[in-house]
Amino acid sequence: MGIDSGITGLHFDKIICDDVITLRDRISRTERERTAEMIREIATNIIEPGKGSAWIGTPWHKDDAWKVIRGFCDIAKYPLSKYNFIGEEETAKKRLTTTPFLYQANYELALTSDELALFSEPVYSRWDYSVRGAMAHLDAAYDGDHYCALTIAALLPKKANEADNRFQIIGFTYSGNVKNWLDEIARLCRKYCANAIYIEDNADKGYTADRLKEKGMRVCTYTERMNKHLKISTQLFEVWQFLEWDTGTDEEYLNQVLDYREKSEPDDAPDSAASLLKEAFPRKSKINKAFFEW
Image 1: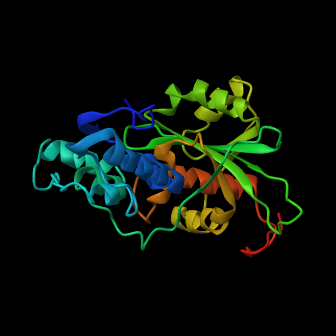
Image 2 (image 1 turned 180 degrees about the horizontal axis):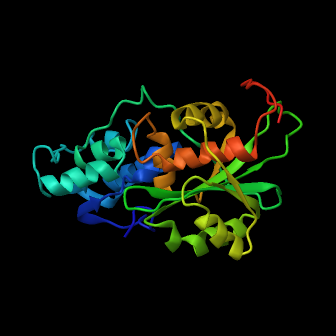
């Protein structure tokens, strides 16, 4: 059973827990606190006095629930660099297809420094379907080394006590060729009432745009001339504190954003988010972090 099942009142002589600390604990402080509280409950009330427990898993955040587990268990580590379980070829493949943070956490059981991270912990909310004017962006992929990334966002009404505008935003990632995901992309754009979808036109000579038009979507194509790192570190970074991420956003999508470093791949998700903000919600004036004129 999961640790969030109805475990209150149960008692066991031994408990073995596998991957109860997950990727969600990396991207959500609330999730980290909930997991830690459940582990305390298991350790103090569910395990019979004097009996034992075993915990198997991966570190995801410096403040995750492994801090709690270390209080009552010894920790043994089996990093891939010391115990090469999968072979050199498979290791090299995982390095190519996994962000540096995820590789270090998954296979070396180590957390990389956040000193170079552009993006801090996201703010979460639920999508408000009454808000209109949503726009979408698709970063299409055509081979196995990249992800398709779909981003949808809408400018939220400014509240009376706020001087700044906020966005609701949601993102999805898909592995493999975009041709396999066009129906799903069209479905999500309809679900979140996206008025249009932006696609870079110097990628596939209009194939993806034409297929989405056939599905009844309004497609806006553009030619990208801006350096990718500059785009992400300005268009996305400068509005990060004003973004409210829907809780349905893919974990892979948010991890690509949180793990973004210059010239580090995969970077399809932050590229899509930055491109959407740049193309669909252009700023009228130079950025001011206290107040925006849109």
